[in-house]
Length: 303
Image (tube, rainbow, N blue to C red; front, side, top):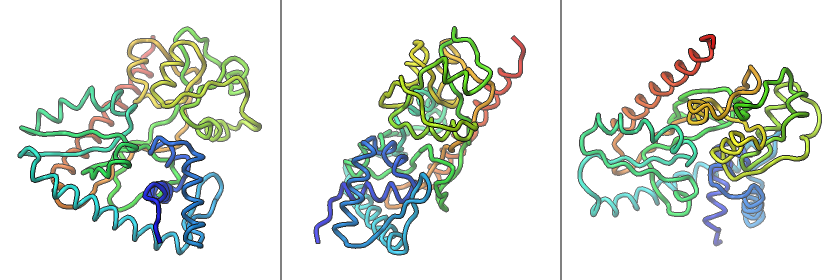
């Protein structure tokens, strides 16, 4: 039986993240595409692998067994790729990281020189989830944002659980309630409408999302759009650092809501330097704590 590798990747990400929306965001493909590939895989196999539960999904017993098998198979493929590629790779410490482009550009890269300075001769490779998916890239570490309901495995390290704030342009007047926000500003969606829907539900809003919204491909573009006065975007202060420090945007409501967490996942296989990976995770944990403390202190100091 021939099975599409694309369908396997879609199933693996959905199973690992317990959400098709999260898999869609990580792999940077449409939600409909993820759903279609998973449905085709189940139809091809003639067995139910996933079952919807609320806004997420859960594995059936057959799905759990299959997930374990294909995860091991992907690791074997990636290990073989790494082993062969390492013969022509530069010598010295190396580390491959999978992370979202918005997180890399806005938060990680401005700090990464600090870690590189600690490890002489370090060669770093950063790859987006979709590119890694298509190329079979085997990372040492994956950095991801996951919904709170997504499972945390033994190789996962929770880095931070920052609240998501409603971010608007600096000159936008603050609002006192969710209803006032929805009346005054269009919502900016980063790829999927699910995040705003769940955020509003947690804030006590009942009803459908209002019309007049803007949908953009990713969080970075959503923040840029909010800073230009096109509406309100959801983002944590870690990701919104450039706009906040430049005074281009602000949280328009006083409180944020936690919907997810940043997670570092350690991978194993030939060529993976476990000690270096652990050192990097410890370093990024410390930087996130520092950034959160600075941002909290800034909010507490009167203007």
